[in-house]
Image (tube, rainbow over all chains, first blue to last red; front, side):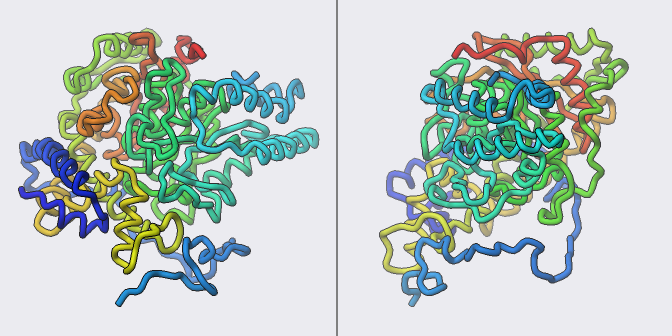
Length: 92
Length: 483
């Protein structure tokens, strides 16, 4: 096992400080070593459980909700919006 | 008056010996008296609560009746309430105002409840002490230098300190039961799928469940009748008939089988005083005619590792939505989209949340998925099968809730693994999806101890029957925190 904090921070979109990187690398070492104990168990042929109730797809008709957010414009919740659009920094 | 249970208060309201406005004012007077010490709330909704109480009084005067009509309740601050802040005790949602009500909130309103305010929690429900709150820690009413537990520690402390008549919390790995045990109140985690999660801010979607924190099991039954049931807005809520849980209060426990899982007393380093209280609780249940049988849950020792893989994997996915674009906090420091995401999340999330996002990202990442995430899902199957086997031999399992009573603030803050191991007895129920309840069963070091009851899928009723009979025979749940 090699834990690469730089790579994980990129994947998780977290700009960690050097201090945090050091501490997290340390703590992940301890936590992952503890998790290794699962390897004591033979799980060959065991089906993985993603969901306890074994649900299947739930469908509904593609119709507007019974109670739409009538007076609420969700764009107004954005920390930066302008003329009904989300504002974000430049992408290119 | 603020010390009433739901059952007591409803009776007084029905007999018109008390008005909802009087009760609500008494609760706020209590809040004014003790909240400086306890700090259970993130925000109070005083004015709106008094309006709701007035409405309740009008309805009562008109002869109406409803299960929670006029009863002041508190909500953990990750349950959405329309037009009010829902912060999840996180900086990233600190100014977030929910545009809609969670289904449970709509149901509480229909049942006539008065909402006192939103309670503190560990950020995004990640923690076992409430110390991971962005706002402030909450103190245990039984010892102000002690944690109230977590993550629903604000709700358990508020109920214990009588700053509300009852509260809702959420439980992903023990977050209702552990704080209930630490604060000497009753806490019920329903079966996965029993209560709608619509409007509950997601932490780990295959484990999260909303449930009641109350002064008695009878009150938990009343709340379960209101909040349970299939919800078309939550596709994981189960289409299973909702019984009248208050009928379970009338049943007898004679002849019911009580499973005692030996591993819970040999694993996890249980404190001898906690063990003694739990064993005495089991003897009380036997003296009431329950038949104790030894059962085995052999994979207990693997539950914490399994849980932290699965919960963190799901959390890292769920929390990817906090990107500073659509709602919540956004950094001031950015000149392109990617560093806007990275800085927003770095500044907006606290340490524990980042730790879990990183762990979850790792176990899902290419090259490690099979070794960690898939392995965890397979062990989850083994844990689930353990409970199916054990609950084939008994009706209800009895066990400790926590290895020790409430620990001191700061005691485990620097050691995340030790903090995770505090949940060793509670997380299996979430992995298996079964209902589980904590009820007060004694004291250790002068602090409350919880007895955990676990049952079959959708059989909360048996937990309520056993828990209620226990509370009829004992008075631990009526003991008052020295505030």
